[in-house]
Image 1 (cartoon, one colour):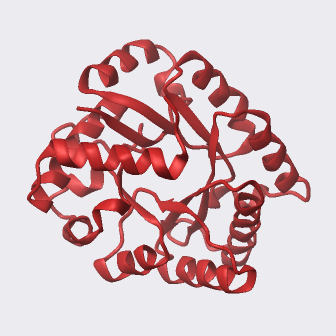
Image 2: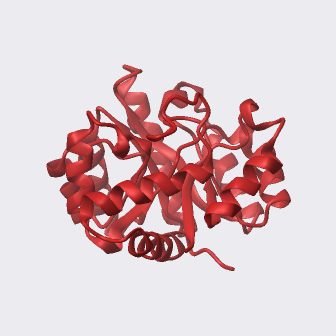
Image 3: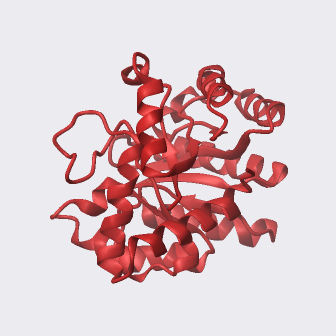
Length: 261
């Protein structure tokens, strides 16, 4: 059984001392590919080094919405150049809107749209962070497509929306990725969303080191091996085998990110 963790942050300090051991654990449970996300372009060098060390890792480059205030006139060019500089860059992001932790809504929207433009220019998918901003993200994506007449590819990562909101993004052609939150007892809307997403639009992730899933929720550091628990929970929710979920989400990740063996 093969699994792909489509959203990790392994360059964080918490992994510095034992990343090789962490890798042995993800290999043991069958994680064959990982997509490393990016919070700020300044992370590029550290992420690139990890991807060189571990060939199963591909990565993205972009600016997180909570760092939108750091956007400068040359940031778009910087992201574009970095994305072109390494064939292991498979996406732009993470980008999007976070209205839960920040109120600079207009600046976030400007930065989000600018990165959509970059992804279109480079024909790369986008990794979208969306927190308490589903309506705004939907409207921006819809308006962008109407204006440019081009279809965006991408994933709503660490998805926490309602089934209604989920359907908006499925209808826009986006993949929906579920993290450890889908295992939480209180996460009924997320579980309902996991039940209704089309199989060819389903992805899984850990978003490590955050959001450890049940039964590892008490551990402060999440890690890629725990993506197995997320696959098991989604299989339970959907009434399918974990092997089926693993096969489908792995196939979907290969397709969205154009991953190669």
